[in-house]
Length: 460
Image (cartoon, rainbow, N blue to C red):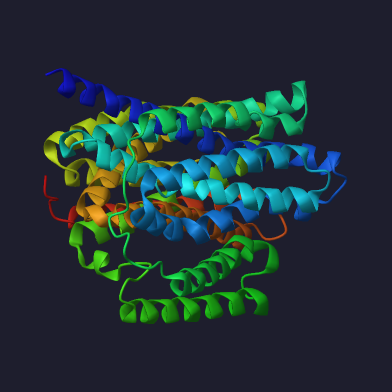
């Protein structure tokens, strides 16, 4: 009886440990964008150069997620997760102390390695330490911590940079990271890799890294370099060729880096595909709304930021509730409903005009947040629950990669539509471009709802 009670309490401390780390990494992911102008002035550099502090972080994380997910399966998730905290804290301290923009970019790449180890293993740790009857609830609470971090990031970053220095934005990760590291060492149970006798597929990891980084770099920089430029087209074509080589290699390796048979599982593949489309829609909003609120409607950044919090706040409230519900009724109904709600919200956003009341804009954003919050936790629970126990790390890596690919696709799609319609004359055509981008996001969300509806029911 006493042992059972301890076990019940232990899993909530595991959630606390992972939650603090999730909040910290989400906070860091949203805060740096806010202070780029301050960093540019302080380090006496140009915008295109300082933006690499954000771009390199995205590329490293996206390219290594599957690698560190697989490493967690082989060597143990706690070991990989804890090592990630050490690297992340050290990378944060080095970034804060960077004397030049070149070193800042290098230290951000190092920091991203640690963040990747956290992203790729935290869902696996929660899935292993919570029973299937509470998996959605635990993953929903983790999602809530993510959204709280994303919400708090811009305002906290602005306050730290104004009150102290831009360096404080990185230094704040050190005490928070050390707290999370201590909690993780104390409360996350030690686990052995499920396949310790297998060798790590180093060749596969390298080929995948090259292919993903090349593709995401092209999608990320396409609007600046020109979508039809030889560099972008060459990167896309070369990256797709490298990824095709990777798929061929993985079919021949005895212990592949990425088990492609996971995608033959209907629930798993549907959850992964709908996750990509969910993030395409979400990041269309993230990209387009500032243009609408600041450039078209004349709000200052602080006012726009306050209005934009309607979405993540609703997401943070809804995600744990939806996760708990999915533990009882399964993932298909809430995940499909969430994507349908998001499609409706995106369509309503595509009807915004130059005089739409801001209260209506906030309501549409809140509706989008409701749809995303209802979708995320059940979908994550379905994907993680459908993966075999010895593939939990790679499943978490696939989920995180789906998020990053969706993010880059969403921003790239929205940016291409906006710039094509707007041309060189913002004026009234800016709102037309924003509306068209939201309409494309609505189609993506509707397709995601359709894919989610045919996933079948996962095993409980």
